[in-house]
Length: 368
Ligand SMILES: Cc1cc2nc3c(=O)[nH]c(=O)nc-3n(C[C@H](O)[C@H](O)[C@H](O)COP(=O)(O)OP(=O)(O)OC[C@H]3O[C@@H](n4cnc5c(N)ncnc54)[C@H](O)[C@@H]3O)c2cc1C
Image (cartoon, rainbow, N blue to C red; front, side, top):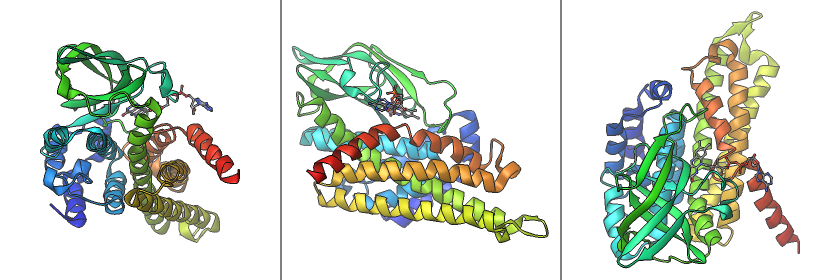
């Protein structure tokens, strides 16, 4: 697998018609994740010399959307693996990049942990401590809702380091690490969300990524920007799945002597879904181009893409359920799953409100 079409075909093959079963059981078989990981598909922007596909952001985004259309849980795992890999690539030394990224492209799985009970939207309240003791690095803290942690071999943990912050790579089976699945999440039920306790975890000092001590906001914003863009593309996938399901149903189901699609109010629903899919795709493409060119607009473009796409996905999934009505109003239907999954997209990687605050700051700065 070295080309996006082959990568997308492999995802289609491996998911098949199993996404609903995974969702109901709350588990993706780990061999599926390892197979995708071993082909570099879970972090496809990693350079080919380190086992990734070396994709630029638009083709990686399209692969993410393709995955998101089939299974948002798998797409969530892909987002976290990509975000963790990106953080290692950005903050790691060359030796750390070679050592960790080649593991992440040969089947090992990783989650990335920012959030804590008292530090959700406000990550500046995080209390996880990372410090150096002799030739060890010690990590102490409690992280929550870490996507993919239930499957992970490694965890990238963000914490305080002196007056600044640092990221450290923690083996999930290191002494002092406890991983507990979040029970019964509303959506993305098979994404392996887990709370992670780190009780005086001692690691060799090379587990600490280079650049330790930088300001927390810089570290967090850099890592989250990849995640926001990836979630935004995942939302494009949700919208595409909903548009396909709604149009098929509206063509084939008849009421009052004609196809649902011929009733103008149902047609309006389909138009709204198409608008949502197109608008989300365009904002994602723009943000991806900013990402690839290293544009100073990149951070705002990613927030805008995430905010716009998540809003359209949440409204679009609700619209799709409306079009299918009883046919989509049960667990096991793609639009019912999309409805639950899409709501979470308005919470993660910066909730609607946090995105709006960032965008308002941008508007004010641009106007001054
Ligand atoms: C499915 C899922 C996956 C996740 N995956 C990860 C992961 O992989 N790694 C990780 O570290 N974390 C993860 N999280 C945690 C996620 O990042 C947080 O849930 C998110 O940042 C919101 O924090 P909170 O839930 O504590 O809500 P809170 O911060 O308590 O916010 C509650 C509400 O208040 C609003 N609010 C908060 N502050 C303001 C403000 N200043 N102005 C206006 N409104 C405000 C919020 O927008 C929200 O609507 C995940 C969460 C979920 C649900």
